[in-house]
Length: 341
Image (cartoon, rainbow, N blue to C red; front, side, top):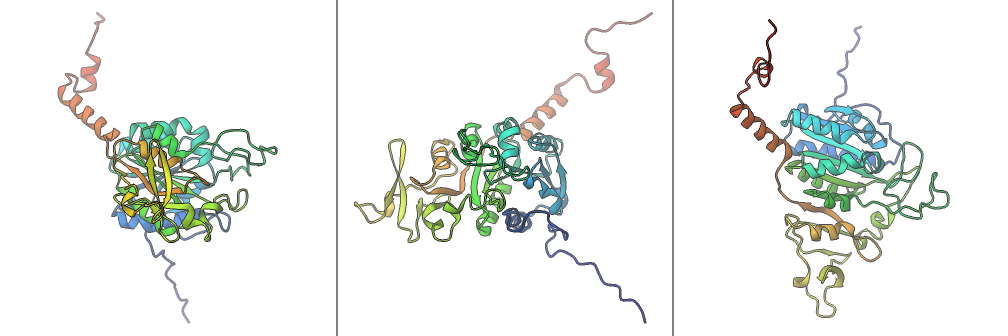
């Protein structure tokens, strides 16, 4: 009798890892991970050229669960680490996975500056509007008045809107998705990977333990078609269960209208232009909230601008050609020098 040698189990997808995933059962992170693993093969990027960088938080366990290179960095510092990686090796596809606390609080300064510089890095921002890893304190995106472990009488702070910050920092790509829609996540993640510059994908993610159903007004099966508007470049901004509602603009405000009423036709509905260099309308879309407006989903802004590391490389190449200093010896012998006799 011989012992049968079994081949070890292999993942069906080259970006998948077999092993335990230490997120709570029902956490939205599972759906996001699956969407990313399915999206990456469609980008054509080899796994050995992909790097995931994270900070601190539940979302920051992500690099351990995907079959690529990874870097688990410090709280709020993932953007700085990712910037260094990309500038050092522009051929890599660099991704930052962060949470609303990690990115909007201690990492807020790094967040706005990576967007301002437009380094070719992709950001996945898990927004569950709470500090999950540290057990339920309010975060910078927690709605005002929310009762949490650190605000028993209700938080008195005004909440950040990640999209609003992105527009203020001259961000060139901003999208919003929900963890309950894998198809939407996969499509948007693929487009984020294609974008030249910093792409920010805000993922409305559920924390089943400390902030369960925080996005239920948007994601609930009975309300999602009425309370979400999925934006696609070049198509009218139409939503609703019967696709009979849309957005028009009067002055500086959007107005929700019903097609067929008060003489409104489909031709009156605004056409989404994600590529417009003027981000005024993208800013307005990113700020839309219930109950006055549906929540804007999909790619809200995708504008091509100069990319930081491309311009930096051009400066380096120019300096190499024009500089009189070609070596360390040249540098040491340059400027004011003296001889010891």
